[in-house]
Length: 268
Image 1 (cartoon, rainbow, N blue to C red):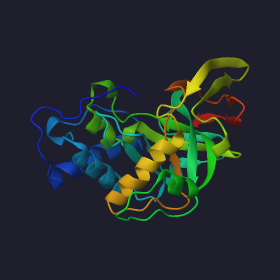
Image 2 (tube, one colour):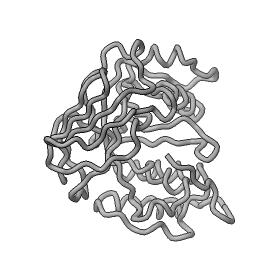
Image 3 (tube, rainbow, N blue to C red):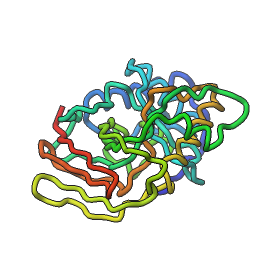
């Protein structure tokens, strides 16, 4: 993921009315499935706190339970990068309907970790071993991506964070057997669309391993007084960036010797 400016000029804290207006604008674009312009200058989040407040308000407007998260390990320009994925947008049956889809849909091939039990808030940070022990299983997944901004490249990172870091949903594929003994940092990735091969690449996890971002998320949520709950599906980064795939076409994603995810995507 490219690096972004963290703070726009003349940053200031947004008030409740501005946060609500920003959330409603992004929610409207989410509901319509049609990207729109950047928010008006006075409604753009100025920092991480504003962005997360807008995220939370969008969640209230969506009115659905959280079924999982997307997250990344922190960097200098992205010290906090995560977003809830709402349960209705997490599916395991094909075809997967994508709101606002045209001839092609943007996806990211990823490996998600499913929580076996809660990691509740506590004063002491969770260790990597504790987080790993709380994982029920690993799954081959596709993140469905699409910004609510027509020109997301022009947006600051807080604007993108407010928009759930461009998440549209997640398709959950097969269980990855014995994940902790497998090579999850890198593997060959091949993507087929019908009889054609769309991509052959040496896939590489952006944070080195899916567990790294999960450990960060568990401790970040705990620092906010929130639990990483059992049953949630957490995806942590694409092995090949964003890929455009055709709608209404049988797709196969071959994750080296880890397994194969098969799906078709269609317009909702």
